[in-house]
Image (tube, rainbow, N blue to C red; front, side):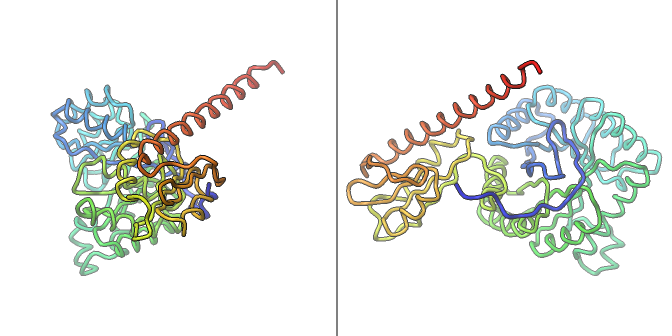
Length: 379
């Protein structure tokens, strides 16, 4: 029920990865990367399907060998989301996956050989309408830049990126996006801020090698949150040493917290204290697990007492304010006559939430049907 995000997005060029628009005000795409062996087609497809179910807009797949490229052909045939091929050094792999229908190439043009090889990849990408992502990483800067700057800096990352950008622009290829990732939050933020002023292309955000599920999520939220709040960023990946599905969940949580993009339920819950009239933590944890399948955006506040409960409920789609024995229920900011027993909160709230989701979906379908009917009327 809160207003739209006040963030003003950076203006950028629009590109398409498959049917997913990137840049120029398009929704910020959330992506992850498979960590299975690409030659294990079944395992890789299964992971892509799990990522898609979690909401991934794009999935990146490492293709280090020609055998992996042949496996990629089979993987692409079974994928429901656009796939990005991660390729280093061997330009022939890029040509092969382009032939097999890849939706984006993650390469650094300067790393794939001489001018003729670079041109062949770029010409192939142009012919098949395949965008390119240039990916610079603070841990793999060119040796001369390490010597020039002494250590990784924002300026060093941008100089590295611009070397690759200059190659593509010289070849009159402009459908690309760029990332300048680092494991240090301030280094990454500095690099992205500098790069945002240099090019018109979309920026892919990430704090690389961020760490485990908890610490990596925090670092990613801090770093990407700083940039997103400034309007910088068109697609993102949260890099965690964890199940890739968690990367998608955290990515959407970051966007949700900034009111940039919503997917599923946004739970507003108190940390609980001695005033709580029911077990808030257990209630929220149970609902999160039960309602993972819901993709309809909705704000649900679950507050254990009447101090903050009514106030949060007023700005939620559905709210609960804890009280003795039975807690107050709010829908669209209005208190309902019905009260929910504290002994059956999880089941009762799940029913209420699912009923509201169904109602919203029915309303949306009616609106779509009406628009279709209006469009079909003769002029």
